[in-house]
Image 1 (cartoon, rainbow, N blue to C red):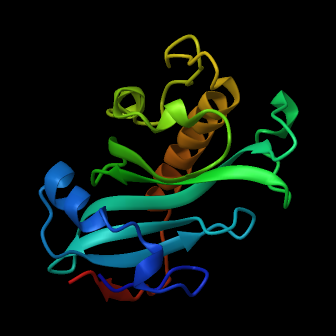
Image 2: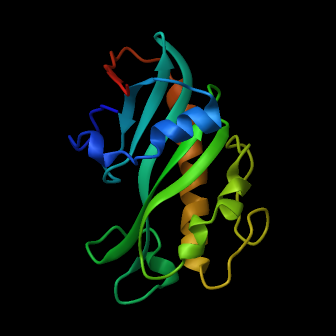
Length: 182
């Protein structure tokens, strides 16, 4: 799998399972990724169009959620991206109309809240289209012992989905370069 990420990282920065997950979850074989947008205020996050034969068949978001500080978790620090924050890297696969099809945490680098990496919990987001408000403890299951991580993840997924919808509905004059995942 070859690509150019927003930070200039090469193939090794993408999770090893991405091709497998694209195939298994979306039925997509040998896709190309087209960088649509990277978020400068949120390090190492980007949106990609997943294409086959120059047709967009899905979308991919890759990013990080900052959950806690190394000294402890405090509700006010869930979105703090300071150097002492703890984080995890994840990706979301969307269909061609920005409906979530799959969410996966592939690098959990925090000391608390690892329960949010569980497939049973992440499956709650499948089918989300960005229209309703997501709230942990209401329409998204809360996890005892992972409150900060669950809330930060829920907030980020809602925000990212809405950003993608705006991005794909916005007319663009930009030319994007496709990179082969083969």
